[in-house]
Amino acid sequence: MPEETVHESRRSRSRQAIATYFRRLSDALGRGEPVPADDEGTVTVDPAAEPELAVEVERDDGTVSLAVEMEWSEREGDVDTDAAASKARFELFEDAGDDWRWRLVHDNGNVIADGGEGYASKQKAEQGLESVKKNAPGAHVVDESADEAAPEEGGSDATFELFKDAAGEWRWRLVHANGNIIADGGQGYSAKAKAKQGLGSVKKNAPGARVEDAE
Image (cartoon, rainbow, N blue to C red):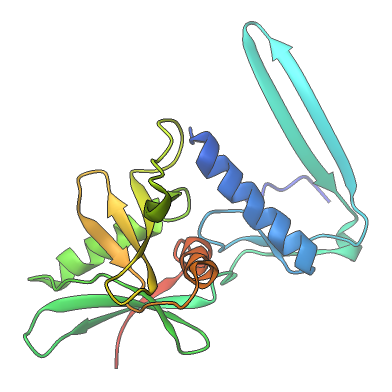
């Protein structure tokens, strides 16, 4: 069979975004699940139990490259070019005040994030959730109770902030570099670890989540 390129992408990313991408791969491999090849999770591969792993570092005319490659027999694995790796969906809806809003709903029915504000138009709400799709995966996480600051290098144009509210519950918010809160968890957690799990689910599921109108 002739060689076929199923998926290929190339673009500059921050070290933090690359680390987030590899963590997604690592988590899927560790659980024995299909591995997402793209950020949206629309292309996945299901490797063999023991694929061949090749790591290569090359230096050529002032450029250094690091290549990590897995290879296995097609009979022992599978490729899905129409996958849905995300376990959540974005729902767009109009509230009682005729403002447009969005919420990110997990397959288990839980709302794991929302925009926290209403928009004058559906288009503006869509732009808001697209910013979350783009920025959540690579966003740094800072603990405001420990006076942490986001690293100057890496990350995305937004930062996850962990904080305690007036009732002593832990919450998170995703704050854009322009100061706007573009997403929050919508609920308080009794423990910091639970809040981290909540924002971690958003990091993982937001990029590939489908967008649909709420019924």
